[in-house]
Every structure is written in structure tokens, then in C-alpha cells.
Image: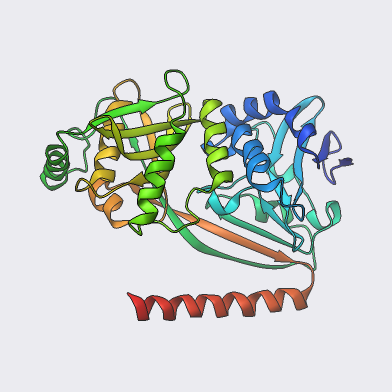
Length: 356
């Protein structure tokens, strides 16, 4: 399905509605991703395997990835889908810590003028977990009669590590932070660190299932934690080389495990698993991974969504904002959305006060 863009006639839009067609763009997608992508959540593999494992069986969802080409080169990718309520969303947005379009530096934002409501059969746009410099507002600014609402709805944290700097040579670490890291390492001296990748080890599915069941039985996680579809996604990402595992073992048994997405020298802690057999086991896993991975290069570490105290206090990462953008064509639908949104926000606030 092809469309000419409104402003720049040399740009063409291809809307992909089938997974088989999406697969043909793997090479071009990852070329753009490695050159201009900002997060491991933007890789072809993350989007493709998310859809294959978690969305394909949900028939109300329709893949609607937008590919923009200049002549024969892909210059922008919008990894989107339409859900059962006809809302345009980022693929796997609820489980992505960062959602954004991928676009080449050779294209000007002013050239991209997409009216999603004309291109697609949608009632609204719900873009969440987007960065502060998200270009959505620029793309839609020329279109009238649209009702918009945006807010800073979430935060994430990250830090850059120079080669072999962590923890002793981190400038902002005082004796307090360094002493605490040494203490955590001392407590866990009998535990062993291991880095799993598809280059050296098979995906440890049985051990992951065992640890998951332990976490559920200890009420650390709910029954819905790491269901079959999510495990299939994780294994696919691992086998494709987009995911590695930071593992802590004791007597050859996995005690803690972090699923870490990677893009070049950028690493994102995505999902953590641990039991309570050792104090601060999860923190120790973070420390071991960071010490190991920065031995070879300068790296960027993302701690994901949510400003959790144990991450902020121990690692002092930079805090970044994430935004949500909502757009409606119908004022009535927009008004209804705002009422429901405010009601949900109020209920969450009351719940937080009552059960803190």
C-alpha cells in the first residue's frame, strides 16, 4: 500500500500490514537502527518477535508499520499497530521502556507530514513511553481539527561509564556509594557471576522456569509473570543476539538473572529475576554486570522505566522523562477519554494513599 507524502514528493510511504512483508525489511531496518536508533527496543528483532510471539494470536490487532523511502533507501520507520479499539500504538508499547520512530539524519522533520487519520482506519492515537524530543508534534502540527493531550507520565534512568571506571573512578560517587558497593560484593562473595549469550551458552529455559515459579511462590511476582508468550519472545531475542543474560549462581544454581537488551555498547536492564537466598542479590547482579561490561569499552547503561530507590541511591544515574501523547479526531471521544483518564488517575492516587 503506497502513498505519496504531502510535502516532499520524493518520499514514499509503505504501510506494512503483514508479518511476511515486514520480514523482507530486516536488513534495511537494522541498517537504519544501528546508525540512528536510540534504544535496543527499536531493533527489527524486538519488533518482529514481539508481534510474532505476543500479538499475532490476538486477531483484533493489526500490524501497521510505516516505512518511508527516498528513492530506494529507507529513511524512516514507524513501528506501529492498530489495537482492537482502533487506537494507533507502538508495537509492544506496554513492555518497552522506550518508544520512538527511527529516522535518518538525511531527512528533515519538516519533510514528514503524516496524517495518520487519513492513512489508517483509526479512531485515536496513543503513543506512550516516548522521549522528550519525540517528533510527533512536529509531524502532526499542520493538521487541524485534532484534539491532543500529552503529559510526562513516566521516568527512566541511565548512565554512561567510561572504560574501567566503575565504581572507583565514577566522579560523582563519594565514599558512601563506593563503600556500599564494596559491602554488597562482600556479602555475596560466595556467589558466582556468569554472562550468558547465544555465542557461548544455550538459553537456560528450565532454570528460568524454576526461578520464575520460586518468585511466584514467594509472592515476589504474580501468576502472570513471564507467561509462555513472553518466554518465547525472550528466547527468540536471545537466539538472535539482541538479548544477553546476567546471571548469579550459587553451587551452580541460578539465584538471580537479568534479561539485558543490547545495541552496540548500549545495554538496557529489562526484566529481573531473583530469590531471597542472599541479601541484595539483584543489586549484586547489576554491579557484577557493570564491572564486567565496562572492562572493554565505554558503555551506556539504562536501568529502565521507574525511578526505583535501590537503583537511584546505589548508582546515581541520570533521570530522564518519558511522555505520552494522545490524539483524537472526534471531540466527543476525546472528552470521554479525558474523563476516564482523570478518573483512573484519581483512583490510583487514592489507592496509593490508602495502601502505602
